[in-house]
Image (cartoon, rainbow, N blue to C red; front, side, top):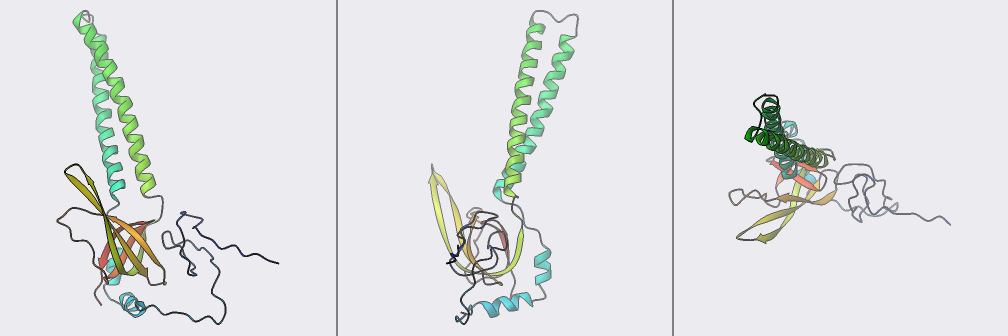
Length: 223
């Protein structure tokens, strides 16, 4: 007797797989080889199949596919940390250089000697802080881009939001259910960008730009 094991999570990105049979992971596009439906089983045509086909035939699709979206907020935060780390390295270098110049002077005694020790110690501390910030920023950027950027024709079928209140403000994260041309449906997170930005609406057709479970952007393609 042979027992068939059904995958529940993608072996590449670890995302939970839906129950319906599919050949690609919705989050990283890796083949998952789920068991197909039994022979002769009726197939359900998606009501969005025709709209997605029209998007693929649109003359505006090539431009949308060529566009590169901005990276996630986590990546941008990591980039800012790396830039701040470089600035701190410059400050540390200046402090250590001043310490060496003062320490090498024959007049370095009393207050100047104390200043020399202070500048050297502060320079070492700033350099250590700069190394820590730069390393953490690089790790954040690497993690944020660890999965491939996918550009796929899609339609937003639903959306919901979660708001976290903190102090006098808060943050909102939107979750969009997106259907792709290959028939895969999955939910993606999209952090709010402030009250001045209108989030994407349901039934919007176009190209979805995703990394893992994150929706980086959605460019509307009219049909």
